Image (cartoon, rainbow, N blue to C red; front, side):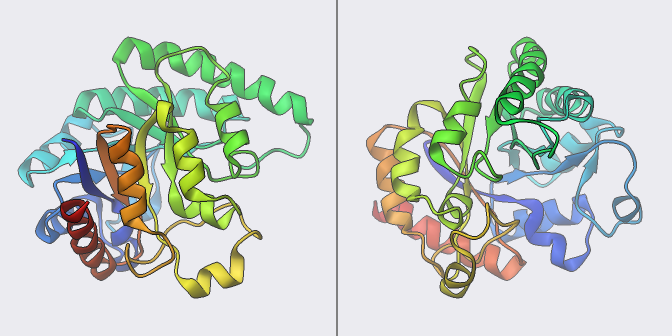
Length: 276
């Protein structure tokens, strides 16, 4: 695999299309790797075919059939949940891990979620440690990694991200680094990436437009999607050089807002990978 471009299915959200349509469009654009999003229960827009998220109540082998039919491979599952609310996160992540194992996805990607205001600073970490301790028992049985992403109030800093990613002593607790979220949170994404390399399992290749950076950097902890890779502030040649120097192999999963941005992102990343 070495370093390969992939795409998070968020790129199809703007078109109000279902999961299968998003996978088909990703394949038509030339992507070999995709990152589906999963949810518990039944969600109205997905059931009506207007949203790309896949219900964990459906057969995961149907998801695999769709992926196989389009000749794409899952780089991971987008499985974000509030780690500080174990009543939600434990059953959700367990089901996501089982789905990931069934379709051959190596990692489920999540973050700590929005912090409940009734938890103290220390209680936050105690509750997350409990959640992750339970979830990682399932992850270890199924051989699926849990990737913690910089996206919320604690993980927006590299220090906070690494504290969460080391709460439990397990080889299956890793980092899914998001370049755009780290940048918007006020971090140096290149320094942050270098610090998490020994735990890195997956990357969200998110670029941030100059206007977006000017308006929100240091004011937010992340953003759902970015602009096309190569159109914004992230230096992808530098990112790839850091990864290459460390001998890292994996997927740069593009998080952008439209199919056209996904097309331009793939073109840019392929050019960078070839050059570097």
